[in-house]
Length: 99
Image (tube, rainbow, N blue to C red):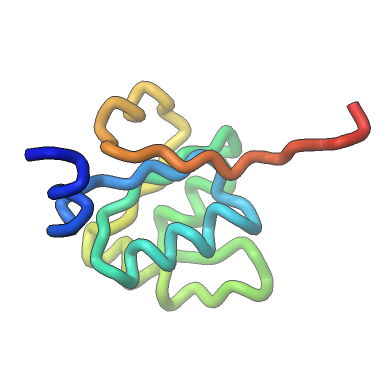
């Protein structure tokens, strides 16, 4: 099956690197459409919170995160070797302009 076919039938697993102010809402958008997502971040505290179905960002409600975790549509990890499990990778990492 091609990547386009997997995207069309929602069997493609989406990898999101960086689960901050951009990555977390993006993950929620994909899981709301029925895609399975694996989120990657270097911060274990964020990962632990998200794996419990809780938001660590004030303006993002925990309910859709919990729903995605409960439906097995979302996993969060610090294990970047799992990147091999995804068909598409979206990078949502800080890009400081002053360095």
